[in-house]
Length: 176
Image 1 (cartoon, helix red, strand yellow):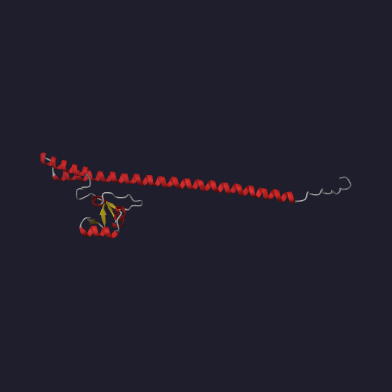
Image 2 (cartoon, rainbow, N blue to C red):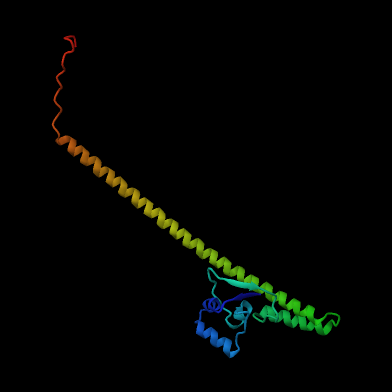
């Protein structure tokens, strides 16, 4: 499973780091390998916020079943019924099925977060593009105004100059 730092986990849950440490010390959350498993975080805080630049430390197999939603609990109940009715299956294969169901649910949540992040990024980029286009249009308008201003200044300056006097030519060797 994915393991988050306490800082990332607290930002994702929308609580302070101190509140996260309190949850760990109360036993509501378990900290492993210097971090918190995403599944544990989802169990305690079901409405997590997706974060950009989220740093997942490592990915490992979960050691305990995940109980985060009605689907997973239904899968566990169904698995227990199958265990009672079908004695040929071993307990470990049932635990693997439960872990796989939890992993699928976690992957679906991560995909939803990624989709939301992608949509937010696209909206931000579209806004930035619109702002850049408006800025370019404004600069082009200002440049045109400046060109018209200086063209008019040149016309005024030329109108104030006296007309050039005809140049008297010297004859070359009396011929020209």
